[in-house]
Length: 72
Image (tube, rainbow, N blue to C red; front, side, top):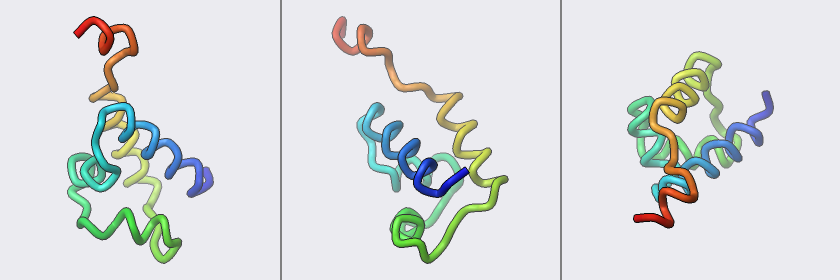
């Protein structure tokens, strides 16, 4: 798994749920507000355990489907 792929996954999910990546990391893993910036800058990276927790959070809290958003 490349870091770029994880960043893309988190950014895509964050956009779909209308939240910032920082808020997603806070909710998923109780990350500090600066964690996302460190990952994007390449000065820090998550462990696979952390990646698994983030992906589990995104799976347990799916973005609304396109048609559900249109019906609201």
